[in-house]
Image (cartoon, rainbow, N blue to C red; front, side):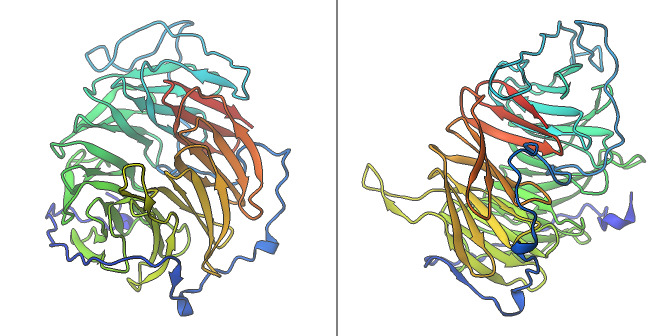
Length: 450
């Protein structure tokens, strides 16, 4: 295994009791001082040209970096190529891609239930999708072919992604299974031994073949998928959360792990010792479950969104909470109970001192990290599911339960484009330069080129 990943193989589990304190949030507050490290001047950023492609800028995908540009195996016309002849795959006739007159290049329609996750290979030529039909598909993004059906899960697939070198892809689901596949042939490589309850998410290491997954049972598992005698083995189990682990990530340099939980905490882990290095909690932190998490691409800072309607920012090297933003204020609901919009997604800009948050109240908010104020309020007609900045650009993309995907200029708040091609809520999306893929409750994935 690559020593640069700083992952030890002792397999020891970390155990640390939570020390959570309760308190109330008072809205936007911050501790700037030495933490005001944002060097980007928004005046230096190129103006947005509405005639440019929907997705431009640098590479963008949460789970994978470099790729070997592996092409799917060739198939005869009208046939689906599957990577195995056993129960993990079965031959079938490929439906021709449907070309909708709605701004999408084509619709991928192989799924028979809601599609909850989609990922793109590094070069954008292949997509991996999974959903409520307990099935994943590998397919070409040029026209939907060739198609490889990945069978074997027995419950909803909720997350998927390509490995850093592009040789493998992984799927996880509510059947407590994590399956690893050959990205070229679609053959099942291994089924990982892991938790006995639902897998909430999986993440590949940014530079090596190591996979991490968070579970409903409050644990995080890390597996070695580098070629060698330890292939497929569990490197370590991180324990200490007291609720379902809803989100997690490797830091950009791959040396630390950060996770968020319904117990209201965010934990920083040291994978050398498999111990918790710090727990973000207390009256200045979230007063409810943490459901979204992101690490700044170039600064040692995280942002976490919670069901309490707040966004909290913290520095990893100092372990200090440096900002707190109230995305949605508590209000009386229809039944007289207090309601607040949960912050379902957060993301940092890599070119501007902005962090964006999307919530179930139907709004996207852009926060200025220098002034600690809300710069823009952008509106959908239903809950916002995901927000992502286009790398190298001031463009922000959001998708929503209102069935739309919207592109915004984060500086002015101007809506630059709206996609309405899904017939139901948009559940996720992935992007690479020149290509954008979204997935939906309408059982389809839609592809936009250029």
